[in-house]
Length: 199
Ligand code: IMP
Image 1 (tube, helix red, strand yellow):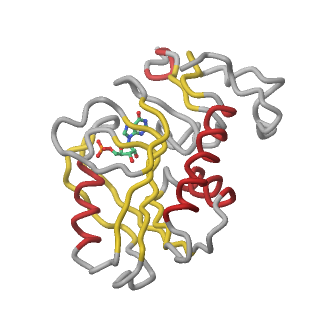
Image 2 (cartoon, rainbow, N blue to C red; image 1 turned 180 degrees about the vertical axis):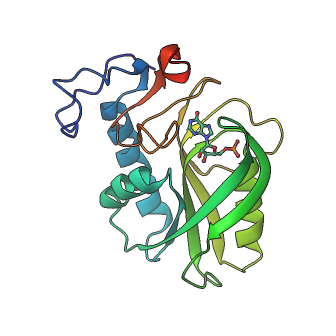
């Protein structure tokens, strides 16, 4: 992990001259690192799914950024669908009780399904989703997650494609939010404590 910021020439306009957003305390995974890893994972996906047409299932909202970038590095033909779920719990911790807010549009029976996630923390959300999707009879069901935290003692999630392990801290950026903000940052970082407690 580095703290080298987001400057790799690919950053969108909201990042001013390579410096991180003023609310960011530390960049944990830079934009360049993310893009490099996504290219590597896309090459693995190309090899593993050669001759097939996988269906990428993005878990909203967090996965929309990683899904869009990953998909543009993959060369096998892809189809896309999305699910939206809400986890009951506090602002920064899930309880494992998941409600489906938006279900898939497509029937996944007999399909090669690759679930794309932003982060696996306790794994409770994904554990619920995988059980739900498995019951629909896909030909295969795999997981790609950009990030994982070391806190997955409660359930074991088979992560076939994995980007980066981050420490057990709350992170934002690259799809991940705090109170719906910071999703569009092109890197993953921690917030300054004052952002949580502005008093
Ligand atoms: P889990 O059920 O504990 O694995 O939590 C999964 C979901 O919680 C993720 O898909 C995120 O939406 C959210 N989440 C977990 N950790 C973080 C974080 O550090 N920042 C932002 N969202 C997080």
